[in-house]
Length: 213
Figure (spheres, rainbow, N blue to C red):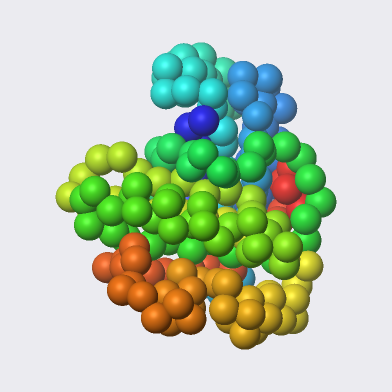
């Protein structure tokens, strides 16, 4: 599965109008491929809208994008508001769950880790060891990675009912010694595995038309 994460950084005071224009334009676009999720940022870089799209393959993505270019009214008319637009095309990890409309919570977290070239297989291996226990605490929305460049990205999205639940889960998993990987390494007194070069995260809330909410 191919995931595309599109982030729009907008001018201040334009987010609500940009949301509205996206919603109005979506009806024709989602006939080609489903929108997985749509959020606005609350913590991190503000005034951002984040859209998550899924495709069966890279070939399907190319076909859909070509067809979408012919849709009247797509993309939505928000260029006057956009300060920056970033699109990441990512490959879903083997254990990344299917993306389908679900009610998971009112707070979503995107964590992005950067690893040296060739580091992603070690990340997947390490996650395979501990993910089953971690999922008992809160749901994973997606885990995916980039395939090109000198530095590869590992992107994972988690859902929580609210900020309080996120803090409770983070404290509980660390106390149990099962999450994150660094905690597991410390508990087992082993050489650190899958050490990232850089980490960042944002907290988001779903907009009214997001399939994940």
